[in-house]
Length: 455
Image 1 (cartoon, rainbow, N blue to C red):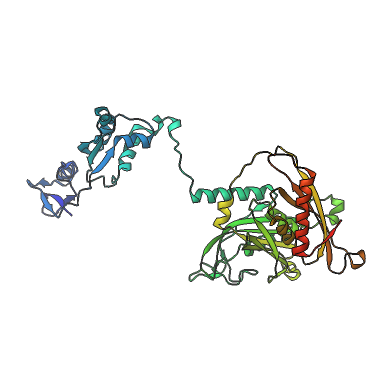
Image 2 (image 1 turned 90 degrees about the vertical axis):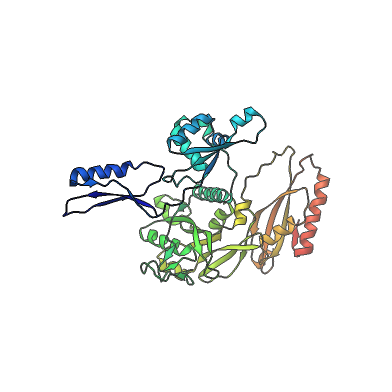
């Protein structure tokens, strides 16, 4: 590093030396002023020469500026002369100006100038840095409002943020309350947190591991609210969890229900219906996530449980805590929990779709059947849909009845009834057309599932 120094003759009992980094092309007003002060205050005498030592740092590289780019980025045409004036006032020097455009008029509008950057402005390294200096002096307030916004393409981060915001809004609109719990959990975290990733240097015994699930924190929140007398709790959290197997960070949605399904008059407080697994299942189905399905499963700590699938991929589970765990929490009503991993495929598919309003009327037909108790609604519905009948618009289950053996269903049998809606977008259907299609679906159910159709 190159330095300069001015030496002064001072009284015999004192000695001073002043040093300052300097550009050789600049005068040294600060050094001169310091010497004057030393002369005035300490009675020193300035030496005739200036001592120079070290090497100067490398000069910043020159930066090119396109005037057309400056106007486009700011959103307002600024004359080239005004741009030059602003940059020169900052100590920059124009060392060249080039243009490859054939028209003289175009050359004046879209020239490219090269600027020499002074040593004290090492922050100016790109074309955008020069444009920033121009708009800073020109004044952002002088840019009309209609030019301040520019369109940018949608990114994955934008889609993820929109999905998370819409998901939280839907849940809040359905009466749930959002909570936020710590990503660090204590050593004894309780249910669903047995394989948490422990930290090497935890801050305290309450923050020793990364949570593998959101449910451990939600259960603690529920327990505190139950102790304070809360009659109905519907909570959810959307946050990050940490997988102990692959040490991966994932986004998950956790839900917990307990208490009364609705308010009741004070004289009928004992008759209020309790929240059950179907309440929680229903709110999951209305989150806007498509292609969700549920399959019965057996999970530790849950008396009733089902796996949640997105297409054919398992993404979570839903269930009811065992009576022993509910008693430990101090709750007087069933505690229902669910957790779903928010995968990129869910975000990608969650886009608004629009279709034309139907112009032609629909025709509905019912199918009632007696099936084995173990045969699920999902199996029946998928069998009907997999027929790929183009006229079939929707399938809806409207009746379920499980009777005793003496009620003519037989042992381990149940009765299900479905409404099938048929529609064509281009014309009105006839009864004969619907009869043919409906008969094919009935035969398919008998052939593949062995159901007993009821007339």
